[in-house]
Length: 118
Image (cartoon, rainbow, N blue to C red; front, side):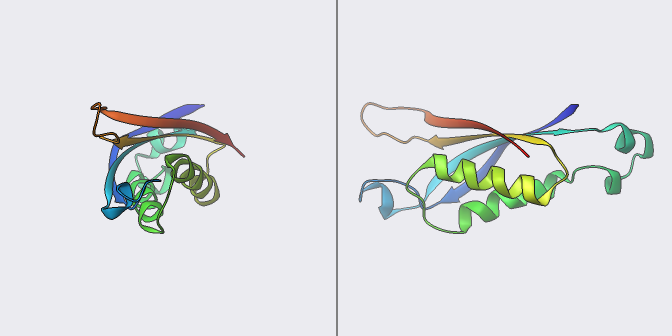
């Protein structure tokens, strides 16, 4: 199996547990790794035989916009489920980073990484 990596999908969503966190939308950075057989796409050089990266990034954006969240774990799980349902892949890895999640002490990001299969 081959893998396609989509890194740094920038999403803004309402996420957080505390009332302070929930006062404004926050930025997430999402990576998606999708297992696929890319031989046919490589041979035909046609998007119709490949996974459409822009559609996958759009699914990430749509999931983030779909509702308010408490946890990044929920975002990751919903995104993995949507990708498995909408695209021909046996397995997906999703990494969701919440940027600047803690004001004091400063933290660059917290993340969750999940791998889901059909």
